[in-house]
Each structure stands twice: as C-alpha cells, then as structure tokens.
Amino acid sequence: MHTSGLGREGENRAAAALEAAGMRIIARNIRSRTGEIDIVALEGEVIVFVEVKAWSVYQFEALEYSIDRRKQRRIIETAKYFLASHREYNSMAVRFDVVFVGPHAITHLASAFMEGV
Image (cartoon, rainbow, N blue to C red; front, side, top):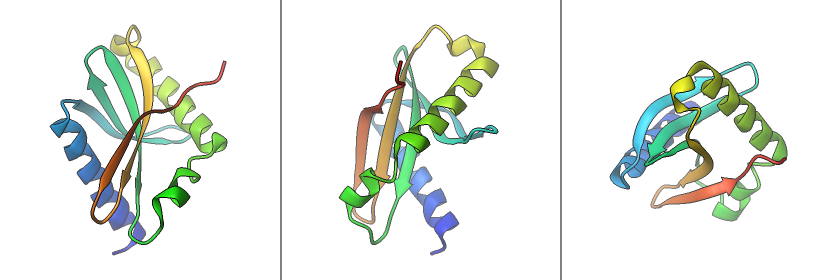
C-alpha cells in the first residue's frame, strides 16, 4: 500500500477507535500554512487535537521519536489557527494526543505533548 493510502487507512482506523472510546470527531485533515492536524475531536469539555502515525514495518519506539519538537510546534500552531476560526471551542480545555496505528494494534497516547510556555 502506498504511503498516502496507509496514512488514510490509519486515520480512518484511529477515528473509529476514538469514537468507540466515546470521543466525537468534529474535523479531519485541518491544514494551515503552519501544518496539518489529522483529527479534531471532543471529549467532554476538552477539544483534542490528534496526530495519527500509521506504520506497517517500523517498531513502535521508532515512531515515538517521529513527533519531535518541530512537529509538535507545527501541530500547536495549526491548533491555534483552528481555534481562531472556530471560536465556539475557545473556552474548552485543549489536549494534544497521538494515535499509533499498526497492522495489529492501535495505541492512543492521551496528552502526548503540551504547548510550552
């Protein structure tokens, strides 16, 4: 499967897993000049920005390092862009999660990173 197909399938599986866990998906593939966010979801009074990492051959530990500070900053800046254009969510708490999707497992890391002050 091509990388884009693997990523799209991973995002679909991640979205299904998040919904099964009680989250409500409100947006997907949000793009701004600073970056992209794969999934935006609501969990109670928390808006959750989710980065999805899908893989077929890499080890889970290697994928953890693929979300470095630069990638985190791009996600955070894109989240700010989303919130600026969707002001109805501005009063909510914000969380950044990562979902790793492999051939046989899905791992959800809630609060995987935070915005530095």
